[in-house]
Length: 67
Image (cartoon, rainbow, N blue to C red; front, top):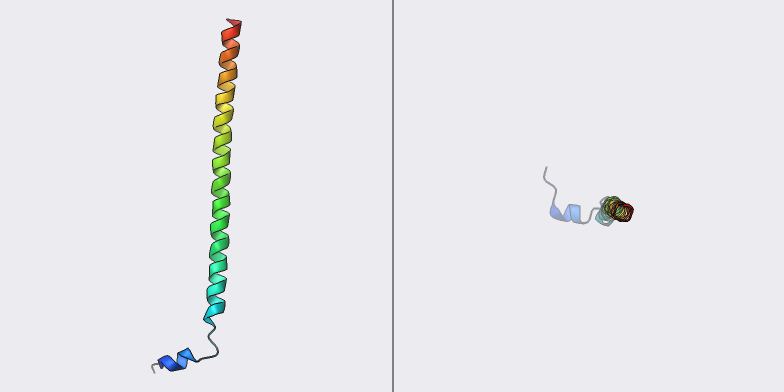
């Protein structure tokens, strides 16, 4: 049997707003968590690069002044 469009439209068992709201919240949380992970990775890479450049610069200056 095919369901009539009006039967599904006025069916009180179906609550599309609740389902959509839950899906959107879950998606938003996942997107935010992924963004936080990516931001942490970017910050870590920047710190490693900055530390490497700083150590190289200080080492170069020390070698220059000693020699």
